Image (cartoon, rainbow, N blue to C red; front, side, top):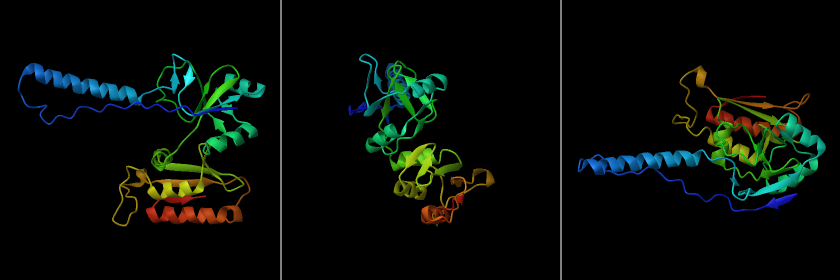
Length: 243
């Protein structure tokens, strides 16, 4: 495997022009010029947010920190037949060193030549550099980003393995980070004076579900303490929960 630490994009996203004098009628041509500048600024910002995969299409190089892995025959078959990639144990172990939240399975394999935006793609992806080589981006999650992802829907489903590690859509989330994210709650949700989530009705109530391995119990030692911590935080912010 080859680990690359290219500097990520350092493009500045332009913001729409804010001119408190824009509505003053001085001269028609001036007003039209101001309006045109505002429209162009908004359009440019929209395009910046709709960027595609982090690849310099002139050189074909990935521009974000990443690790290049070589695929086995079985993995090549998976990428071609299903358009997904499942890491083997050695790959997973190596990638977790540089990217602790790296998922075991990627639901998307995107060609390095792709020029479309990624706005409609759900889940993590790898970049196919050739038939048997892909680039796995190093994921750097922040609490704010995790809040968007975890609470994107009204129901948040987590999976936990036999070691007591928690996953969200195949992505490993360190338990301290998970606690902080749950405590912070949904970014746009309203709260009452006691800090609990406010619901306008049963349709917008939020739920936290944790799925244990088959045969496992919430009282098992490997899960009990962590589930108790999750329950305490969920109850504190008024988040329905169950496992």
